[in-house]
Image (cartoon, rainbow, N blue to C red; front, side, top):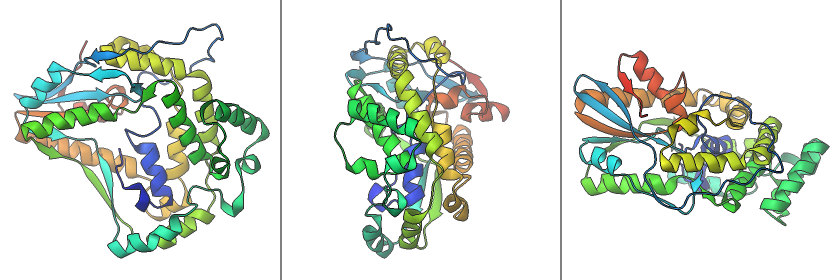
Length: 342
């Protein structure tokens, strides 16, 4: 969800971008939060759907005669799937406003950015020159080595990375080698339709002023981060859930919402987000509550759009559409009617 230029990201803010981004390496998940059992060696890998597919039908949020159409997004998706939805094209064409997913804007001065660049060298690395073999329990490092050989290959530099950065890169490479990609192409397609129709676009944004980026970057490079659990959960997911990711990608492509709701999954995101947002630096700079702030900004923008427009179009991760405390549930609690697609 956070779309900040990575060259000017600062320590934990770079981590927050990777972990909270709807288009980031971590996959979105839906349904009830259950653990998936280790896949049997006899299981047949799911074959990814290719060609033109419509994706899921739209959610309808309304009060009176004002409506907001919501498209549920999922990541990763099949790299050879071409998304095309007439329902989305019609809904966008009839809307007066496009509501994007919420984000964070870093307010860094020009000279702050220039001064920051040298400090970003080695920002992903463990403090004190330590390597993964030095900071991970032996059993975790053994599992890492197996997955690294399979999906990354011979890369000595990544051994210097903090566990959370190494896990992010491993996840990215694994979905690429499994024939999947982030959902960016779908988002770009929707935004292209919006631009073509010259529709007003609103992006709810949490602004954060960065007063001394160079100092923050230097401090981050020396600070510990409680990211071992994030690392372990990412390995769990790659060892047991890749085939289920393909199944979910296929279900999204064909609009099979029943399958999306019912598929169990591992979700490493909570542990990875906690490692960042509960860190000393995040709390020191008031970012521990950034997820709730983003939700608040989006809900305010949604209510404003629903009041002003006969029709609004929005995009949200599938997880937020199903969660009991998600964005749509919050709108429903405020008195808006929610019509879910079959």
